[in-house]
Every structure is written in structure tokens, then in C-alpha cells.
Image 1: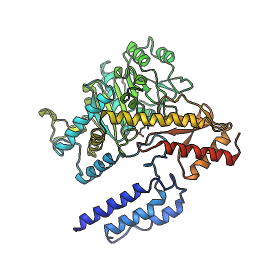
Image 2: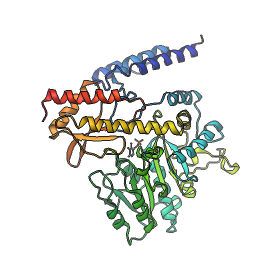
Image 3: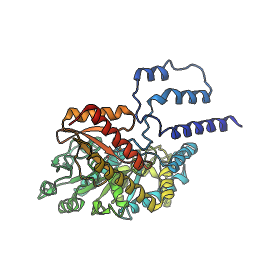
Image 4: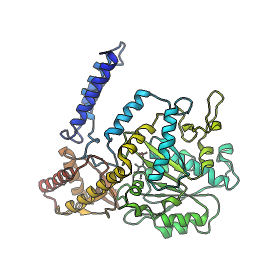
Length: 461
Ligand SMILES: *Cc1c(COP(=O)(O)O)cnc(C)c1O
């Protein structure tokens, strides 16, 4: 066997061993950071070491710090696993090592993105003509979409922001909801808009108040951008997208939808109603590394206005070979990066291997598991479920903040499951996000049992 083949075979064995260990390993090991630093650290080596040795030792030394977020009992944040097919495609992506910036460098990568973008738009119920950008995460998808928004609303007031910048530009009113995701604020900062101008209050599920939104836009003048969300990160609640579209259009404002995970509701006939009106927005963002279970990193921005998207992101340089004149799509004309990973392959393989029905099933299974969590957790003495379980998120607490934190710590350190805590309406709470393709009813029951045991041992309530 050649050395190369030997190295790749060894690595695939190590990878398979890891995946096969997911069910038994503690979901999040209690990590000894100092031990991790000692094992992995030391001086920069002067001389080469055999790659097989380095890899084998990396697996040995990093293992205590590797979270089983790939497994079925990891419910922290909103973290997807990796579909086997998408993982395999991701390996090929690194193997091919394409720079997917320009068509001229990788026609295969460019065409796969050209195919996959519209597939996603169709699946998510967006207009057929939207432009798109494959990016690292919803964070950079917001930057891309909101930069297009900035171009568009300023151009309508005769201001060319790409040429003249923001100094002296008509001020842009940015309206957001109180429970927006933090990445919206950071994206606004990146594009020079600073903090939102108006923060509209949210209800007990985190939904933006439609009357407040209407009021914030009514009678105003000048460029405006509205950011709403499909899927609040704690409750999974959806802003009223029809009302938001009405309010935005009454002012001629750009409507942006953060749909990092919630937009996937559109793929399931049973949940589609939640995103009613979504097609009326101007831009949308979502992650494939969350609910579609594509390995990190994978996200997409969509935009209704091709000219604004292109003006905000397009790039030209004399030494490059541009495809646009010949009707070819250069991915980097639509993204904030120049050199970039061929991110389309893994999503393409995920969608082809699942099909429309497989995606709907993935979404519906997760929602069914979330409902099972809701009804089983409520049987535990003292446990109060705080959200309407409309999607894949479950938010709950115990009678006092101290008890909530103590129960959470006990479950986390049991290694049976992992989820994070949060602050909800001034109180401590626990959040569960079911986003992994491999979660089973048994995983849910094991996790609920871990909560019941924690409550018993701590004598809560
Ligand atoms: C996760 C999330 C984001 C940020 O996505 P990244 O992929 O981490 O950049 C934005 N909005 C919502 C609602 C999210 O859940």
C-alpha cells in the first residue's frame, strides 16, 4: 500500500471508531484544561514527524476535549450533527481542495453551487429568482444580506454606498425585535450601521410585537431595514411574517428574515404554516450546518434583488478570469470571501441523498422529539415548560433559579446528555434543541430519566 493510501485508510479507521463510540462516550466530558494543554502543547517541533504518528497522537490527546455533539443526546445551543453522506462529501471537498471563488478555478464547484442554491430556495419556499451566497454561517449570511440591503435602501435615496461610503449618507433606520439573535447586531456593526435604531418589544415567546413594528415604521421617511426572525433561539417561536411584510412595505423598507434553523419549517407540510408570508421578504439567511446536518461550516444568504446583492459583494481584478461576461457564475461575486471552501458539495449531497421527503422527515422527527420532551418533562415534579413547542426547541425550568442551575449541572455532569442554560424573562431556564438526525425516542427518554434522577437526588420541589 502506498504511504498516502495508508495514511488515509488509517484516518478513516480513526474516524469510524469515533463515530461508533458516540453512543457510549459521555456527551460532554468533564474536561481538565491543564491536562489538555499539557498533552497537546509543548515547543514548536524543529523536525518532521511521521504524519500517521501525528494523527494518531492527535486523536489520543484531543479526545478528552472532543464533545459528542455529533451524537443523538447533544441538545446544546442549536447544533446539527453530520449526515453520513454529507460527512463523506465533506471529506471529498478537502480531498479535491478546490478554491471555489472563481468558475475558472473550479467549474465543478461553481456549477454545484449554481444547482444547489435554487434547490434550497425552492425547498424553503422562496421566490425562484433569488440570488444566493454559500457562506460560513448565518453570521456572515447576515453580513452579506444586510450589505445588499444597505446598497438597496441607499440607492433608492440616490446614494451610492459602494462608491461614497456612509459618511454623509442619508441615515438608515434599522428596526429589530427585542429577541433578535446577537449575530444581527454584529452584522450591523460590520457594515457600519452601528446599533439598531429601534428595538420593538417581544411577547412571552420572543415574537416581535406586530403593532409595535407597524408603529415604528409608520409615517417615517428615509431608508429603512427591518430584521425579523423565523425561529427564536430559545423558544423556536416565529415572528408574524405577514404582518412584518405589510409593515415593511408600507414604508418601502427592506425586510430581512433570520431563519437560521426555523426556516426549515417550510420543508414540512405539517409546519409550513409557521413561515407563512416568508416569500414576501427581501433577504433571508439560514444554516445548513444546523438542521440539515451538514458538517461545519455551511450556510446561505438569499436575496431578492440581484443588482443590490452583486453591487454589495462583487469583485473585480485585472489578473482574475471572470466568468460573468460568458454567463458563468463566479461564487465570489456574491460572497464576502475571495478564496473559499467549495461549500456546495456537502449540501448538494445532503439534499440529493435525502430528497424532499427525507428533509421533511428529518424536520418532523426533531419536532416530534421536542414534543415528547415537553410532555415527559412536565411529569417531573417541579418542572415547568415555558414555551409553546411549535418546533424543535424546548424551554423549561424548576421552581427557583438555584434549583434550575443545580439540576442542569447534574444532568450535564452525568454525561448522559448535554444542553445549555439561558436567561428567559429574568429567570434561569434550560433549553433543549433537537437538531440531530440521529436522535431517537430512546435518547429522549434517557435524557428525561437523567433529569428525573437529578431532581430526585437534589430533592427539588
Ligand atoms: C445560530 C443562529 C444564528 C447564527 O448562526 P451561525 O451559523 O452560528 O453564524 C443566527 N440566528 C439564529 C436564530 C440562530 O439560531
